[in-house]
Image 1: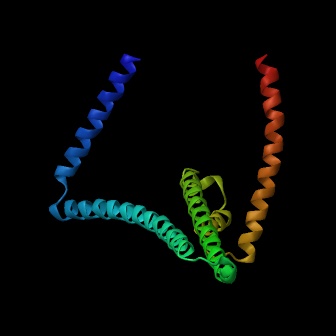
Image 2: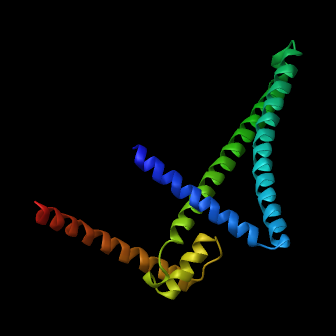
Amino acid sequence: MSIEKWLSERESEEIKKKKEEMFKKLPKEEIENLKKKSIQKIVKKEDLKEQENDKSSDFLKKVIEFKDWLDGRTYLKGDLDKIVIHIQNLHKNIIKMKKEENYQSLKDSMDALTNLYKNIPPSFLDEKTRVALNKKCREIKRSNSDNYYLRKLKNTIKEKLNEAKYYEFLRELLDS
């Protein structure tokens, strides 16, 4: 383990040195542009965190306001309609927050899949299928021909997966 660790540290040091040399060779304008881009990435991440905190704190404020309003009431039977409205509004806020979380997680998983898709060599798929997949990944409106090529790809994948079962069995047979 210590040798592997030593080798990986050595490789990372070499990579760092190469990066520093490349960075020193860049003109000042490009260095400033890179710094601006990195700052923008950091700011975007912080903004996303603040937005999430704001949503949860807003919901908690609404719940506390409802509790304070309830505490100030002595005769609740007359206020049943208002209580129902408050609870319905809180419930809608919960559903809205869950939908946003689901959308964000779906978007993150889609981003991960598109990154994996970029690793597929271009010669693996024909051009029209690649175009259709790109439209699907980027959520661009697809035409009927795009849908056709996606269906065709799905069918070929099913066939290849069925064949893969047999090849797996044959490989196990040959290995034994």
